[in-house]
Length: 112
Image 1 (cartoon, rainbow, N blue to C red):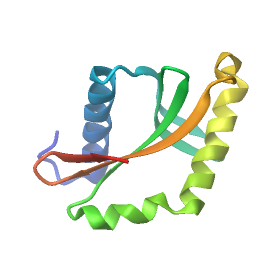
Image 2 (cartoon, rainbow, N blue to C red):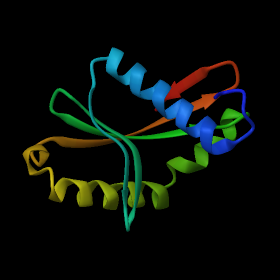
Image 3 (cartoon, one colour):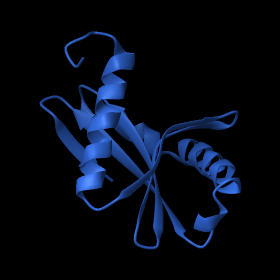
Image 4 (cartoon, rainbow, N blue to C red):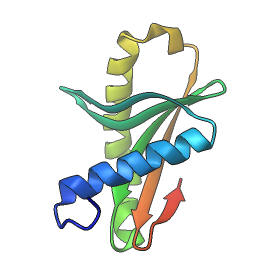
């Protein structure tokens, strides 16, 4: 799958790889590829008293991915998270953390 030029398949591959890494780091995966009318969240996970909204991006050049940390993207992720929280109220006492998983060539990852 990774060898395809289809960016959709690359995105799925790196999301799955991120799910595995988050799981190995002690996260409980609550939802993968959550879609709503207000936006999409790649991975929702929980660790300790935190719920993490994880946005996964692959770019050949890592610097090209950093614009996704701007406030307009964070606002979209927050709106989508609160949509998810409406039907998952048992997590309403958890603190939200928005994290970005950036992948670039040679399977290098940055988790910020």
